[in-house]
Image (tube, rainbow, N blue to C red; front, side, top):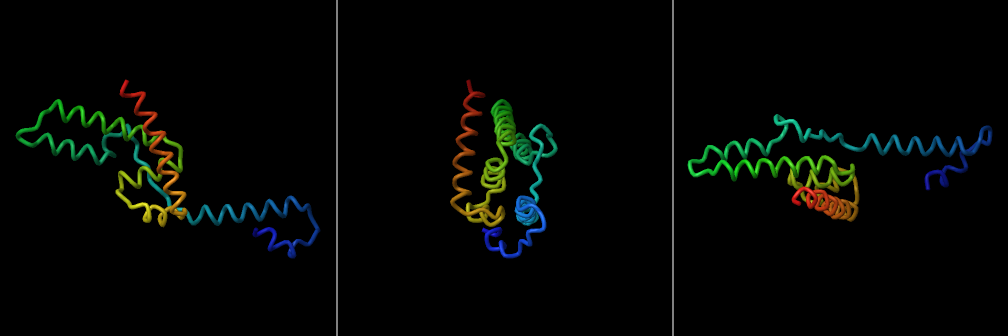
Length: 138
């Protein structure tokens, strides 16, 4: 669309493909600069997992069953690792929805994606996550 609107500015002194490619590069750079950086936590690094603090806190309860907490901690680690292995658009949306507890509208605003796209990415990401975790449970 941008190239079509800018067609009148093409001077014809160079290859049309190069002119068109340059427009594409500029549009891509503009889009990339609008995206917010997201810091991903290493699923294998114990210091970077906030859920482990909750598990450790639960162990201090007087009626806490250590075996139950060990299973929960292992399960949390497995889920976090599976989310980290998802492809980019799915990983970002699933992490924002469930780890950062953002609403779908907030995720759409943060990522600059339409709400429908966020819903699609969440649905597909959860489907892929279920497939990965189904293999772990067996």
